[in-house]
Amino acid sequence: MEANVPDNTHKPLSLSRRWEAYRPTKGVWLWTSAGCIVATIIVGFAWGGWVTGGTAMRMASDSANGARAQLAAMVCVAGFNHGPDAVAQLAELKKASSYQRGDMLIKSGWLTLPGSTDPVQGAADICVEKLINADLKTATAG
Image (cartoon, rainbow, N blue to C red; front, side, top):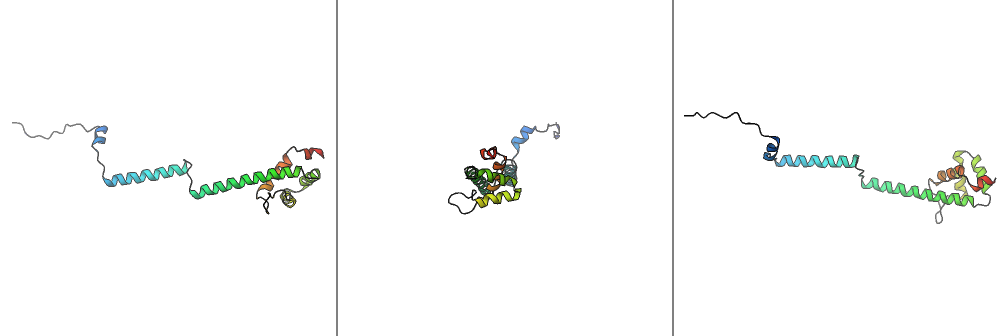
């Protein structure tokens, strides 16, 4: 007769067998899903380039204002160059201090777009830079 001896010689299950046999509870599913959602949000906003609606609106507004300033600066340069005494005005602009140059262009009206009453914000600095640094016909004529 054989005695009922427990068989302690069995091998532990392999990883793939344990994976197949695993049955997670609802709590484990819930917390795993919540962790994945949080990780996706963190990765998306940190490295994925996601932004909130408010940030997107601010970025679009800043871009539109920058483009408007660039347009007003180009109108300013063209109007300045076609002005009656552009050579004298350019010499005066170059002699003025850096903080007075924008005010000079605002007073001349070159920074106000047609149909508007106020000068475009940010256009003065761009226009001054283009006028001072550009190789303009008015700059070389005098």
